[in-house]
Length: 339
Ligand SMILES: [Zn+2]
Ligand SMILES: [Zn+2]
Ligand SMILES: [Zn+2]
View 1 (spheres, rainbow, N blue to C red):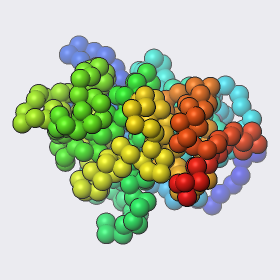
View 2: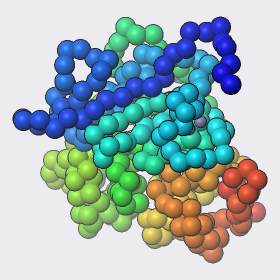
View 3: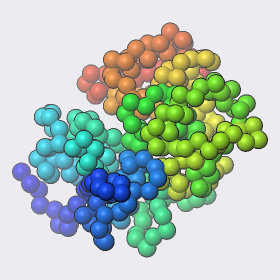
């Protein structure tokens, strides 16, 4: 059954194709003229996302009018499931071995059922805006800071974004490093991490996560200078973040010890990332979120996530956790001392 609505339907779905050709891969967008756009330095994935995000920013629709575009097309992008459910999210999908990329509004159930799909936080879109004459969605006033919550929000948005922007096989260490770089970068995507800081986060002698991010064309190491390791972020979407650098740096600092849910000192990166994913969803001593949210942010399968949660209980970072089968939510409690 199709409901009639008095509103003009806005097609909240955008696609681009990556076409290899002589002289390098080009990005072909049916909505943009003229012709193919050359891919500049950086990962194809982030260039694609930055381009599709421009379209999403232009075709704004109030949240209550956004519908699952997947269902509108007969749910052909994923195997059968129980039906549409949950919030309408902006979802990046990869198809045809990475040749075709699609950004669309889809419900949480369809997003979770679609292979090679990642949720892009809405909040990142207005902040990633380039100067443009297109109407923008309303945004929080620059000065209206809610103390204590902004760092949660900022880290959550960035983790969610990185879950979409980094390759799926990226290690937890590379994800944590990318988060620090993204939040600490200047307006041109340049970041310098002092040796002392890298020692503190136990990355001083590890080249592997840097290589991982370089291999993903997400950043390029530009050398060592004045006791710091410098890098250039190549991900176009990172370059236009709205919050000031200080605010982002505060969020980056909190992400290292996300109280009240910090992983024990020296815990493996997978545990640290899991603790951080819980911390951004924790407001009180008892908290919960969808299982899908956590598996996406930690880039793990549900069974591995359960193991990580058990380890956090053994380390007394959590006092308990459970999976609510009815709602599909993971609920957890902090030890009383944290209250
Ligand atoms: Zn376009
Ligand atoms: Zn669907
Ligand atoms: Zn749906």
